[in-house]
Length: 405
Image 1 (tube, rainbow, N blue to C red):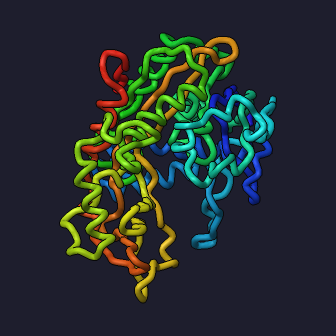
Image 2 (cartoon, rainbow, N blue to C red):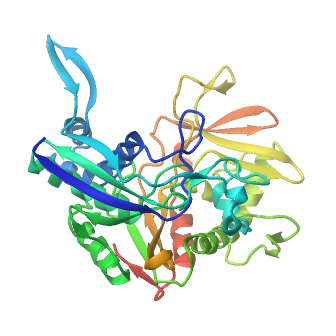
């Protein structure tokens, strides 16, 4: 491996990552490689689509082939010839300082009135359910076959450290990682250089597709960066969580966390509430589903006067979700990232990356559970991103936020 490439990252917000027992120990190479695969696909889709004259089928084939050459794929024998195997680089982690912390014993994380909304019940229910990595740096070292491979992987290393994270709920801002150095060059050491780095990255991306078949950069991509705030990362996450919960949640008795329910809500919240009640009460099903489910599935509603409703992707088999279909969720197209600057991460920015794409394959269904019974609905009723666009207008207003793309 004649060419060595390295990138150093810092953990900004608690990272809930772990082994088979979901116990955080340290950042693992396989997790990093998975994150880099995601960002490489997202960045390169437009270029490969253009090379195939807009043919989505041929572009997907080429993307799969090139990803396999770069990252590796399972080896198989075709016509007595081995296809697949090791990729174009080897990856290891060095200077891996993060260690697991029990947040229930850390004073800083006891204040989570709003943050628990982003954590979800899987990570927080009366207390933190899992340990997390809360600080520290680690260096990703790549041993590449040649300089061409190194240049192909650099944008993914940058994108991950400017916009992404690792671990559970990383699209909600948990586990954000900030790139500090790439191949010996200091990166994004202050607000201005962060925005310049992000703009430089986006100038290299071909955003040509209106509706990518998977989460990728396209014509409708939006990236918004807040002004620099004198908040630590946990406080910044709390500010974001408050805005999102007030925007999306119905709450109880007219309040959400003791604030009036309709403060900064989305315009369809009342109608969405009525739709869910109609489903729960076995009224004739509405012609469309709640707009807010484009934030991601599955989605559960606990209604004070009508019980629960669950919405998941899938299809029915003998009246129950088909367990053979390994797709029971649709991750959010909205990525939240916290980036920090300065000593002790005293200055932070919030970053929203909106990557709209095909919500679900056309032949998939949406399953509604009410009173223990499942009902199918077609997906063409819900491919509507207006609620997320409305959220961005409220959560990231001008001029306080800078539009990158």
